[in-house]
Structures are given as C-alpha cells and as structure tokens.
View 1 (cartoon, rainbow, N blue to C red):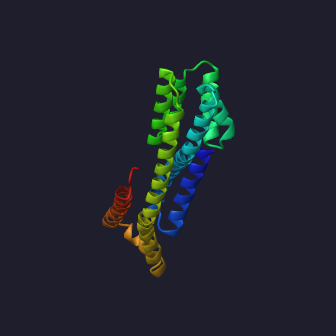
View 2: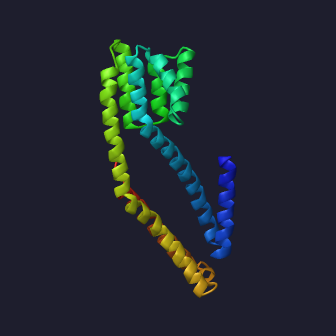
View 3: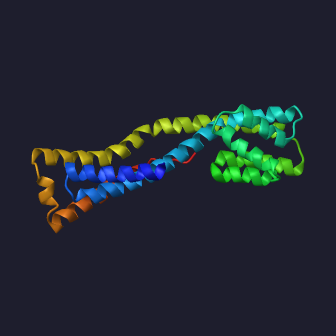
Length: 227
C-alpha cells in the first residue's frame, strides 16, 4: 500500500509541476515526492514511538502493581499487554508471544527496544532484565522509574511546545520559494519556460532550490533538541 501510494504521489507531483510550472520542474517534484514519502514513513514511525513512550509511565505502574501482587515478570508482561491500548498493548503482545514459545526475557525485551528505540524504554528494559536476572524485587525500582518517566514526559511536552514555532518556520521556508515561483509564472505567463530553457537559468534554479533545502535542513537541525 505504501509503495502504490508513493508511486502515485511521485507521478502526480511530476505531472502537476510540469503543468503548473515548467517541464523542467517535473523530475524535481518527483524526487521531492519520493523524499516526502520516506519522510512521512519515518514520521509515522517516530509518531508511534512517541505514543509508546507516553505510555511507559502507565506500563511501569502496571508492572509494579503486578509484581507487588506476587506475579512473575512473564505473567505481568502478558497482563500489561491485555490492559494497555495500542501501541504498547500490541508490542507487549509480541513480547508475550515470544516468551510463550521459549524466548528469554532478555531477548524478548531486547527485541522490543530495537523496534522502538528510545532512552526511556532502554532504561525500563535494563531495569527489568537486571532484576529478573538477579532474582530481586522490581517493585521499588519500577515505582521510582514511574516517577522519572512522568517527569520526562512533561519535559518532552514542554520542549515540543517551545519548538513549535521553529518547526513551522522550517516548513514555511521552502513553501515561500514555491509560492514565489507560482507568483512569477502567474504574473508573467511562460516565464519559467523561458528561464529553464537555458543552461544558465536551469543552474540558477537548481542553486536556489539547493539553498532552500539547506535552509530547511539548518532550521530543523538547529531546532532539534534531544531530551
């Protein structure tokens, strides 16, 4: 489904840019559509990871309550998979299935950390693995970890709010360039065809597009804060 949608988007943008701007912009729009498709896929993956991270305090609380009630860690993970909503419930369901067919707790939780990479999950997995390996109680560790995860959750929300303007600026910069091309072609019909009809004009367009792309990258890079 993703591949079909990507091909349709690339062809649609190629045709749209060729009609609205000039045939020279067709391949550029197609390449932008290809990049946008994979960027959207990465954004969806990151969004799912963020949703899972937001559920970690609740997950830690459920595991703490289950282990305090005397349940084994394997049983606690299976119970959390049933109680929590997606994506945490789905991912813990995979962990429970792996444990049911003979995988160790360390391998099953390690695979979970690889599927959803985050610092918070690595800390939780490390706590569970070490406690399970040493045979000690995990209740106190999970209680403290729950409070820490709640604090990190609030911090991440505050950082996203503070950087919302920077994020918007990063997308506005290339849209301004596209708007300028549309306005130019509307005021002077056929201007882009004449500009891209020479090697010098094509080079100038490519340099301008490269500068807009560089500006987008720099704004996004400077506004990225790892919490």
